[in-house]
Length: 115
Image (cartoon, rainbow, N blue to C red; front, side, top):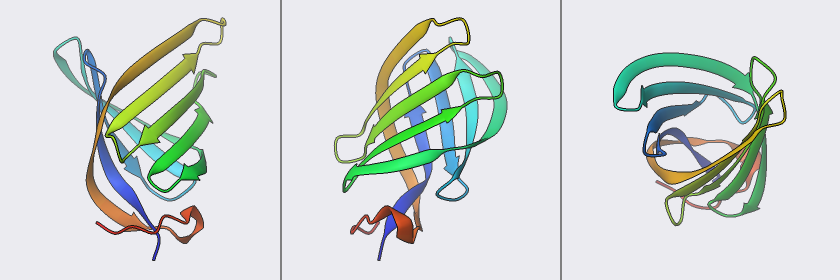
């Protein structure tokens, strides 16, 4: 049985968000805090997921304004690495923590672990 985390809390320090995997190709990202200010902004995006090994995923997508985002989700170590390339070519890199909230079965991901 293959599982992916359905809801994941992400903390980059000054930027906090919740990731909600609607499927293996659709992700809702809700930004919940920026610089200690609570906010609630959600964007639903189409994503690609590449399994590197069990509990290590590479995700990539374009956001609504054309930025290119790639992320490494290491669920074994609880670490997320994120790279944003803006439409003007500026690169922003962040490393933070991720904490799975619950799980969901998605057969395509070949992840042989359960929650």
